[in-house]
Image 1 (tube, rainbow, N blue to C red):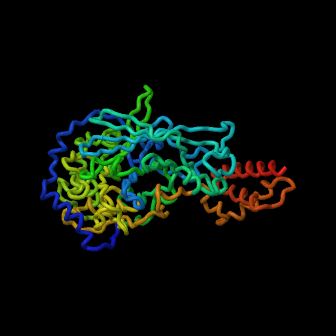
Image 2: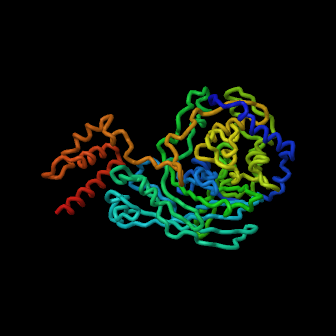
Image 3: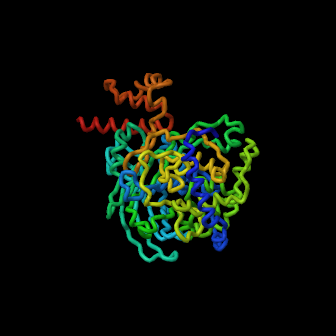
Length: 510
């Protein structure tokens, strides 16, 4: 938890908005307690006991922002499968076939979804007699050498009082961008990424596939809050890991209630098919870190199976959060007084005069005012630093939600000024300028041995002769095969791919 530089004016901006909200109508939980909790069964990265054992269904992060290059549209990004090791073959990372991946939109602030964008996936295998994900270099999404592929359908469901009034299939059998096996297998991965961007009617676009995990933070907060002495801050724990992403860009007019009411609430869910053939919700995500560090163990699985309209049952976790007490115990920084009505205002209602809908029902959602134009120079602390186009008004890929959340939890909005943070201020990979904005995934061949350093040349010299076909001259391709062997299990896959590629090229030559 380290200091962050910022201007005093920006620092006071969100506190001023919140103070205005407190004066205008208070943040008492009268609207919350009227909610009726419902029965539930079992996101963020491995944040709850049940979902941590089924990563295909684990929603890691949700983003929603006004598209910087198309400001008449909203972009929603949801990620699944935490900690994807790039070289994790031969079974690389796919969406589950027995799941519904949903993006849910509340248009009027009543804590009930009015729109659901539902993604369902199918896996296709060309040759089940090989262990390979791909049997040669992949140049396109329909390349015969891409052995394992996925496609998806996208359905738009419109609801009234939680009852579906219409269902429209807006995309059918759209190809998914594959896992980035490595440079030998996918020499131009960016081309594959672009082929997976699919245009929809009305100027909307959709994408599904692997991406660099855009969440940047030091997760060693769990080791007694960075080692108990701040000795463990500053390392981006998620650097080099990938996720599976769904991205959707739609006109504001499709998801908002009206020009007069431009605020929407957004959350994502995963439903998994149970033994009876019914789909049951097992993962839910709105604001970051809620289920990870706000809800205690007894509530985590219940939260993942619940809906925003059920959130009265979790209110005391917000008004009496555990994290400030832990910080006080370890670092002697006094915890703000309870009940924490400031947190209720920001995270359950939205900020007054910014992203709070009229007649709002308090609930945990990522709320976005679609009428706020993108910032010319986004600030990583978002609204806390005077940038009203950023978190908690939606969430952009560049928003430093760890630092912003730490400072708010430690009382920034109630007079306890602080500059707490984890010393990780940006993602390790640069984000894109156009949809889907996510950075390309780290490739499986990115290990040091595959790059010919730290012993890579020794591996090449030891294995080069063994892998060179009889009578063949030494070529760059043979060297690549040998170098790839040093990458362990990922290297074995590349060896197989390269050998098949060499044999195919040899057959073509004759």
